[in-house]
Image (cartoon, rainbow, N blue to C red; front, side, top):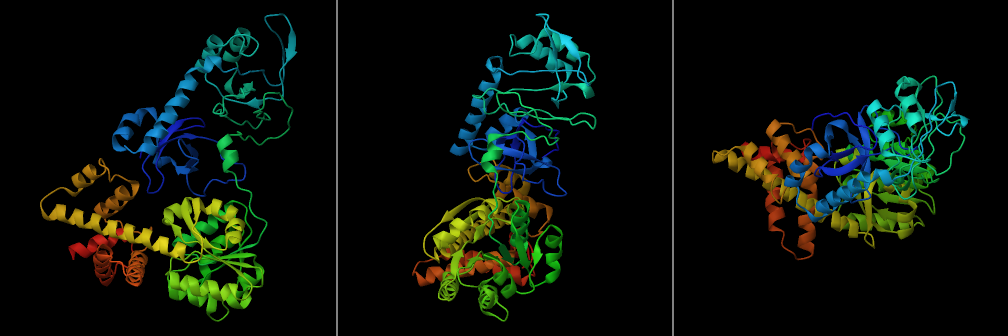
Length: 509
């Protein structure tokens, strides 16, 4: 998507990870939510959901200019509900003449003026707001009475240099959306924003729009000490978001150099898994496979040697139910608490804090992890006894892996029969199967870009474990078995450490 210039309050189409473009509004982030480093992005609240996230500018489009295009692409019920929510918002916006707000203005330093009634007054200690002259003219013509900008005030404002304009808005209680204004701070002017129905005095220089979404979405970090073992594709994003949300985190990784960046961001360093678990109240782990998960707990200087009674261990690795059962038993038998919490998503979704957490085990641990799960994910599910989350995650990844192999097969068949792969993708993205996942993975293939967002070797591992789970349940999994063979072929072609979309190469070699 092309880069656009946006400001708070603008309606947009935002594309997040694997999801289709969704209607939203640029809002102010919570005070404790820092903007991702190195990324030019805006904080967006999505209509029809409670979701909000930092979205890169290149993943944003103006709402009105691309409305027809987006409606043609997306036909789902939830999408239509989101569009309806936007239209309802726009109808309210058209009735702005019914929205009462107060504007007070002055030159800086404060000057006395005489209004239409001949009363003398002084305007001061307001916050700075750049407005263009056209906006001021509209305000003058559209509002009247004590709650609007008077003609005299507007006339004065139209001739004031922009860097000297000071305004104070008082939004109406029943308009939850009218909370955002384009702010421009000045080194010479103190700026304060008031979002109540009464004028207040404040010496604060920090301007923060109190958007209801931002307030509801803000996270109060737990006071418990958090440990994290494993800083791979998924773990790195999780730890980064935990730190951004104010959690106290101690990290460990088999390759110690990976810890350096997080130490710079405020994390503490643990020399061994045992040391981390001895220092922390809740320790998360996110490693590659069942063997790595067992070794981390049962091996030398492992979790079991450091975790104390009452402490919590959360296994986030995608492993088989048998491994989860074993780890749960060995942890709980020693008076510790256990939760499994594998995640659905990718490196990008992990970085964006938009993972889906699927948890099972000790419900009290799940509740203790609430602020952590809010920091790392868009939603979480609790599925009961330990082992259920592993089962569910293997099924989800089995479907994803099989689907990816089928897409790759379709692209190669299109090429083999003289059809345009790009046209195949264009048609696919106009139908019921349209999704961000399909679009991104197909673009990866067409561009030959297989930088890992989710390792191919890991999806093959998950397929293998899902097939084994099916065997134990005496349930056939022929589609997964076929897909597994394709991924094994791709691994034999040295694609293990590439993205799952590299399964395409199994069909062309």
